[in-house]
Image (tube, rainbow, N blue to C red):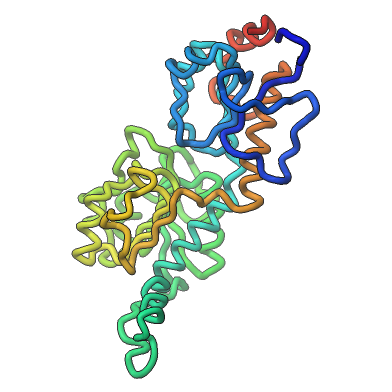
Length: 321
């Protein structure tokens, strides 16, 4: 780097939360234009065009596990490393998925709505809540990485049977590994924990919903692209799907008049599963750590494309902008 200030220049796309320590050799800049590294969430695209417009950029650090908004190959071709933080959102997101599952099965929105409307008392107090117990039910996990496996352990603690479909593992860390057809046919609750890829796009669709048990509950804290929302709405209207808990949607956020909103049997949150107080500190702090390891000449543990990134990015950093 040139000039009197030799500190590493980092842009973080949100105000760093209390608890994230900025080292003395780092200066936070107001935008990505002059940054050596960026710490970013999932709502901005990082591709060939973005890298080309930011000639000082040397590393993109995703503050989260999913990196479908980062074109890793394009970044590497421009001499920009990319990394993520797969451990940071695990606990917060698994707990959020459990919270959605409980909110939907216990029909919390409906109970609160009746209370607000003044219809919760008297002889009709118990009429039509339709709440379920999870003990003895079956949870189907589509994807069983860090978040899915932790949710599976929570579910087992509630007395649920856990079935797992994940084509990338040979043995399930929790529950029983099964084929997708068995999971569809046996699960009372289906929870999605897979990345957004061409293979997983709309894995929840009219056909898969029809193959599920009547009254199934759908939980999605992964990516909105995994669910065909039109098919989900149809299945909710018919009763094939009893309810849904969604932290991710297409688009994000949903417009206020979207038909998924306002339903007593659907709980939608605006992609906030990982953003607990401690979760944000882990997300931003670990992403910053990954970026700084690279800028100081090391190799981050979660470098997304080692072969593509070295030696091109390394040469660029050592040469300076």
